[in-house]
Amino acid sequence: MTDTTIPEAYKSDHLFLLVGTNPLPNYVATQLLVVDRATIYLLHSKTTFDIAQRLKTRIAAAQPSLNVIPREISETDGQKIERQVQEILDGISPKPVPEGVGLNYTGGTKPMAVHAYRVIKQAFSQGIFSYLDAGSLRMFIAKGDEPTQSPFVSQELTLELDELLALHGYKLSKFRRKPEHPEFFLALAQIHSNPDGFHEWKGSWDVRKQSKGWLRTDRPLTTLPTREEYPHLEPIIGLFEENAGDPDQIARQLGLETLDSCYKWFDGIWLEEYTLHASKEFADELGIKHYGINLNLHRSGARDFELDIAAMYGYQLFAISCIATEVAGKAKEHLMEAFVRARQLGGDEARYGVVSCVQNPDALQHEIEQQWDAEGKVWVFGMYDLPHLAERLKLWFITANKERI
Image (cartoon, rainbow, N blue to C red):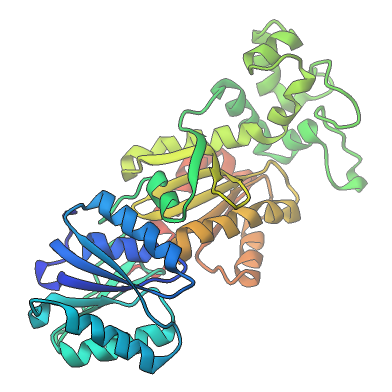
């Protein structure tokens, strides 16, 4: 069993869980709210049958001593719900002691929560009723007439990325924890941290500025930038010179064949590597062990997708998109899929960020929070964050739960 700060008096021998579309709160509850050899009842509807089965598998793998019993109940009919829950209570033998029964009503539908609570409360006035709040990451626990407890449980349980994905039926086909080519991405981060360097590298999207950078789409990359033409690219020019100014040798350093084949890496892949590097800077300090880059996720019958950077902080998923653009609309668009997928995988507890070269990230963050109803869940990192990205990312991780008290 997982050791937690939740007192034994608030743990159950018989725990009822309402299964919704996000299995994460259910799984967290099984790790924190039961005693050894407890029985867990997964109350699911027809639509959440598969989720309940995956939950049963993951709970059994994590805690073999637990007895996990999925039971189908109605998701809307109050009378049916009460009758079905009562039948489960009547079938428990020997009868549990009053304080040995618990209900965690984080998941499921509102009718399931209301009517399951009513039946169990009537049968066990000293029962333990709990709810995992996604905003504050606190477990609110009420037992009898005692004051409600609200321990902060974010760090009580650490999930691996594989565990979280398995709850949703996904598998990881590829991911990596070690950043590649640090000498190149550090130089490019320095260049992209100010408008002059950015525009000499990539040009300006504003046609009024008539700025064309070295990295252009209207011609192949065959020659290297010079100081005379691009004085603000000194960090990368110096690095190129260390490679004898040989385009083919530079390509080989990046594991590619020609300078032109390095376009995608120079255009933005470097930023993913830099973000992974920045994340590693504080991962050990915060106890973050499960993180990686280019996470390819697949599930039978579903479209595969990829997350640029992902990390588990306790049981909370942090997903980060990376795009080396100064155009706010492009950064917002790039974040959208990560937002949707991370919310699908990590539920309301998930947090989403985008590392970009936008010059006014606060304005973009405010816009996204308002339009996506995501206040406190999104963080936009911009051009002037790049020199201090590790520090900025760390701040986000430790303050992302704005409701923490």
